[in-house]
Every structure is written in structure tokens, then in C-alpha cells.
Length: 125
Image 1: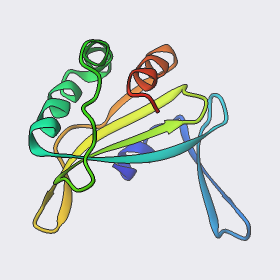
Image 2: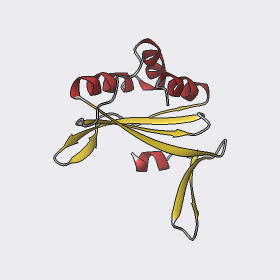
Image 3: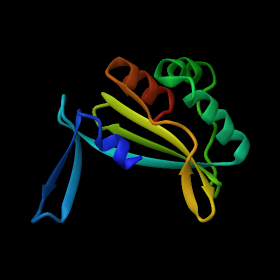
Image 4: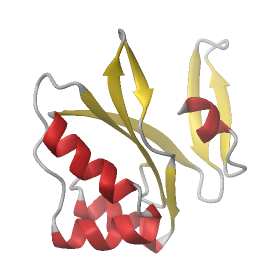
């Protein structure tokens, strides 16, 4: 996910404190990127995978209808959410724990502006 996210021209890297602190920035607004990871059981993970497969517009509509299932403490599916603190950018990807590693199950879904705000509001971050 990191490589795909950094390939986005609106994401930049800023190092500080002698290079020991790295911040990722959504450059159009200057908002810092925060990362959240939520674990899900296979049934809920597959439902989220289905929403992500619809792209940003389908995800936005699906979340308005269903919302996100409640995460679990230990699950074999993980939803990675990267978002700017000003809610102007969101990137999401579902991964599954296979052979001792998390492997992507969906493409990276990216939304900006009003779409990002609606998605982030729907998932209650």
C-alpha cells in the first residue's frame, strides 16, 4: 500500500528532527496523513472487500447504506485507512493474512475533497 500511496502526486514526504521523524503530507491542503488499521473476521472482511471493489463512488454510496461492520480484536483481514487530518483525502485497501504476511485483496481506493469527507464521516473516524 505504501508504494501506491507514495506514487500519488498529491502525497509528499517531510522529514524533521534530524531525519528521525517522517510525516506524509496531502500537499493540496498541507494536511498530515494518519494511518488506521482495523481487523475483521472473514465474513465482514469480504463485505468490505465488495464495497472497495466498487471504487470511491460505489464505496461512498455503500457506506451510506450499510456503514462499516464493527472491527474485531484479532481477525485475519485488515482494512488499512490512510487519511488527512483535515478529511480532504482518504486511501483504503483490504488485506488478508496469508502465509504469515498481509497481502492485498483489493486495489487502493482513493478519494479526495467532498468524496473523502463523506467516506470518512460514514466510517466515523
